[in-house]
Length: 333
Image 1 (cartoon, one colour):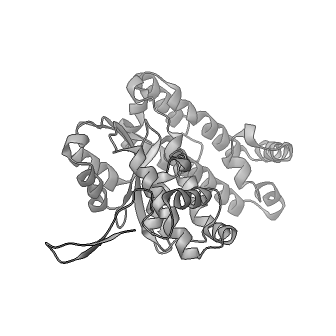
Image 2 (tube, one colour):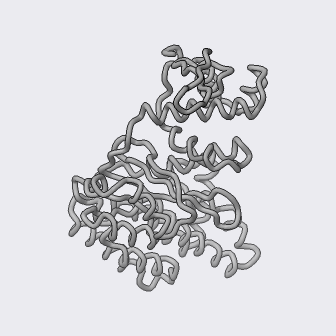
Image 3 (cartoon, helix red, strand yellow):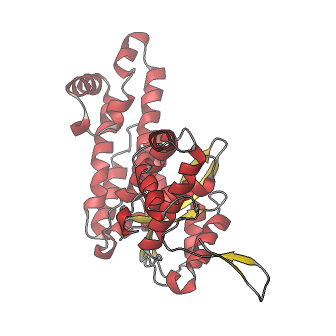
């Protein structure tokens, strides 16, 4: 590379070559090849394969992921999904916002899961793009809802089905634990080890799991009632009209009377308080896939587990934002 002495500023400048990576020891093609390799393997494996230093491989992968983001273009979301992830022990959270139409995360940041951290996303997006958001999918965390109503008041709020059902699963598990405490030692054998069978859909159970669950429900009337109610509740998201959905919910809640299912009664009160955000799914324009946000959480956990934890937050941010983007052809350089 040629070096030139600038007469105006008196600084020696180096010629810029389009095909060189930021680390001038490597070409862009080689740097992006290394980065692409790291998408399906660990940094240590790639470093060992190419006989490079671990830190060098990590820097090259960062360059590759930055280029993937550049190629994806700027975010212009109409429907967003909001969720938080734990980055380390001690309730340390970061917020992930996804574009549910294009099925890609577009923002990773904040210092916790507070309203102030959520506001940083809307400031990053800008007022012109915020007014175009028509639907925000989130869990029932109050800070997310308050921030959405303040910064995107025109958008409808829809509570994520999977987070709602998680509350229902916690309720039936509470009933299972109370039954275990109440029963005698001889009857406890039916309840012990049944948590997975009670929380899973029957179709997903093995033959042994189905037989074990059948034996439990046959001898325990309270758990049998709780299980039938849990399986039927998911029907709520199948209705096209809010009035029909509300009637179903009222009938479901009335069936709790006299059943001694206190955790379910508390769950029904939660649903009643957050009804508008749940019933929003009945509208045809809000029929969006609700599995992407939860699937993204699972992807992030895999990334963290494969790296045995990540201390470099910028690297984690790039990993999260590019995990659903397609790879590009490295031979273009």
